[in-house]
Length: 76
Image (cartoon, rainbow, N blue to C red):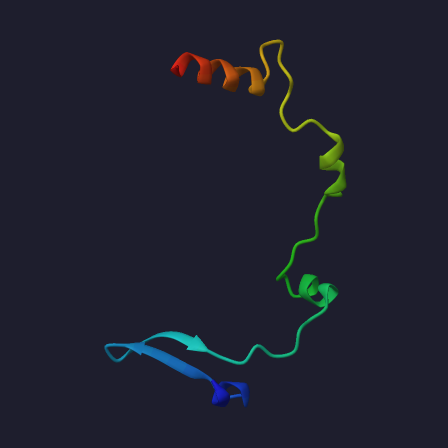
């Protein structure tokens, strides 16, 4: 690991065939740089909008809590 920290790249082999490469991480990039090179895709919507919308439409039937309570009573 010390050699990798100094910049060397380690090739991992299995039965003499290369299967992986371990290399230094390099300098961290900013979000803007990551977007520019395609490593990150910006969100299309604000995640906070999800908190205000119902994720599952409410039906006219019993609630999940009521269903769970009924199922537990049926098991007794």
